[in-house]
Image (cartoon, rainbow, N blue to C red; front, side, top):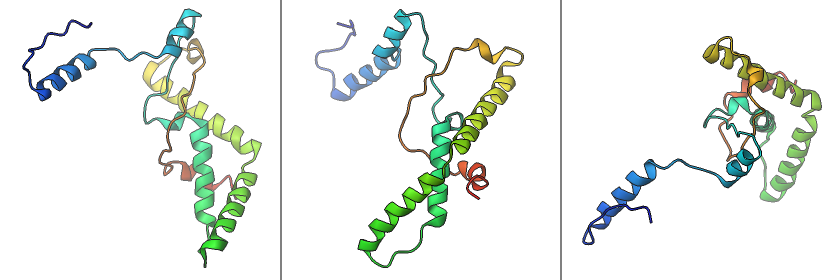
Length: 152
């Protein structure tokens, strides 16, 4: 199929090494990318571990920061579940549309600043809109400074 040469009596470790070597040379493709490309578009992805460009990550970090600062100690498990639910509802209700707007503007500002550092005078507007892939939970330690002033 891929015309990878191997010895029939090769050890399992040797075969796995050949597989890894072959796999490293392959370009990772996604079906959705091919469909998008067929329609004349290109998907741009955020670099891994650069969640500072994603306003959803920033908003989630702000919510977790507020929740963690306001979480009391709980005397029993029964009261804990109800209090946790109430605190999350309070936390979410305090996150206003203006705060979301600030998150988006903050991320756009970071993108512009980093673009200028990397690309100089090339206009940012030349890049098509970015499609953001949502991923697993991330560390929110950098979000705390941004969030503290919003919830006060």
